[in-house]
Amino acid sequence: MDTIEKTRTTANRETVRAFIDALFTQGDLAAVDEYLAEDYLDHDPPVGSDTGREGIRAAAALFRGAFPDWHAMPDLLVAEDDLVVEHFSATGTQRGEIFGAPPTGRTVTLRGINIFRVREGRIVERWGRLDELGLLRQLGLAQGPG
Image (tube, rainbow, N blue to C red; front, side, top):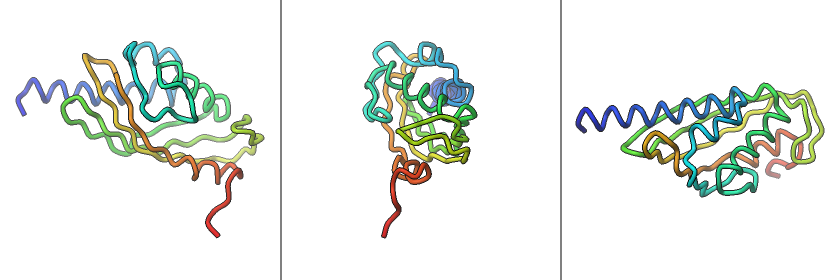
């Protein structure tokens, strides 16, 4: 990998890191406009939302409303060419209703893996798998095995 490719790969990783921090930890919904391309496509939209920019903005607003202290922390960010893979843990204290679950005051953790594609400094695609069942169990909306 030459120096230009390394620089671009590092910049892509930092774009994803800054996006995650701004939107999910700081709760800045304008981060969607700053970091996501207008033709952004979410192949696995969170919580059944729209596949475009408004879907991820709505999901972030939903989580911030229920968990005002929501904090997303990349456990691992790996970049290769135009792709950035994130393994993350996010936590928050439930202060509002979410998915029909009333506020409990409990801290929950959501883990997942995302793959982002970056083009010209903006995120254009996302594929992801979130531990939604684990989150629902913590909220008392799903039972464990057995």
